[in-house]
Length: 365
Image (cartoon, rainbow, N blue to C red; front, side):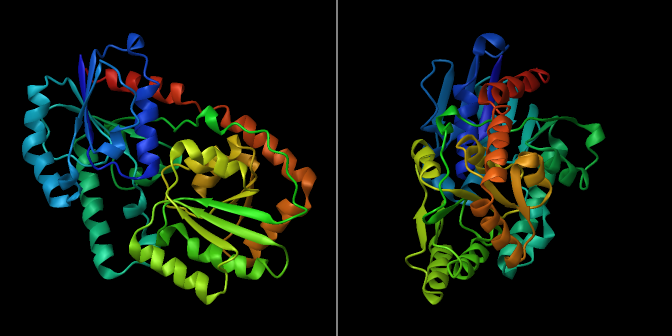
């Protein structure tokens, strides 16, 4: 049996990590699949280990263009799947058009479904999100099976589609053991905050920068922003940092290689999580595995991942500041939550994610 995987529009760091961890932890002997054909760009496929049973087809940079990629997905991909004799089609990016094969999709991009976050974007971007939502819903309607990363993401889509008519499952991400660290906390000196995420409006980095301005009057504090950014968002952040005179306090580190991320976590004291438009919270798991306390905006996804290990706050500046200070001053509670976080992170393993994913795909042979 052969499975075809479309990873052509997997670009985010989280999506790329999910893809290579899924395949690198796959035990072919435990599945009915004899071969995997996967289409994707170089960045998405490069970290997938060599395996004679995994055939990677690299798509060139032209496929970054939405129109070219859509043309390929609509007209050429169905032919490719037939030529490669694929039995099941696995869609990672939430987009496929023609229904000619048993298909399973993953719900990974939740932003087009969260109206509160969309409303802060300019009109053109809002139109883009509306189109994305229509395309995603079309994909999920045609899919024979849908994989959700969290209970929260399933509830969001359940408002849009009748999921009772679909074969569905919830399979969370794992977290790699490369993040294991028995960090000793010492907040006597500078408190180093870390925010790992793509730089975008809905991620609320601007809000956290404003917090740093107020915090630096109370403690010696710094903030590192790690994640992909485009020229526009970089310019907005740099302008804000400059206007608040925070060049010495806020560092924009950009995208960091996955293998170097553990050292980034280990060199910081507190992980910040400020987004609600997420299907999962991989960076929260990475922080817990690394032994960092997590200060998070309280919402359904942060509660689902962190449980009682998080320092939860609302979106007010006062609440965020108080929780950061609480981590610094209340050592006993901080250590208790850090220990609980480590235990929670142990339940999330990529081997388990991979096993469950391919077991689910086997149902559609």
